[in-house]
Image (cartoon, rainbow, N blue to C red):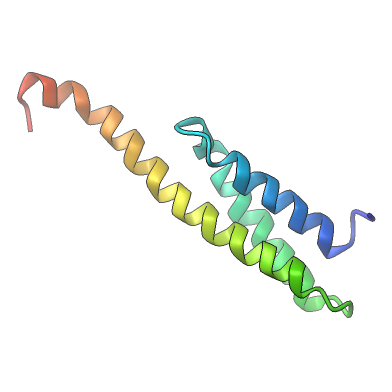
Length: 90
């Protein structure tokens, strides 16, 4: 597959979204899933080739990237607050 084809962006976005599922460390991959998925979407709309499956993969990667980003931020916030909670500080 050529690097300029929308399918390669969809595969990269899917990989970022998959790697973002790793607890705590996945926060590094969430922005990549959103960014590469968005770029893949732009390329799929500009492309003359019918690529609905690639477009779907890019949409799912952007959505998963955003959802996992919020979950990861929540987990990091909990990790930050646990020492205060254990001391009884609110």
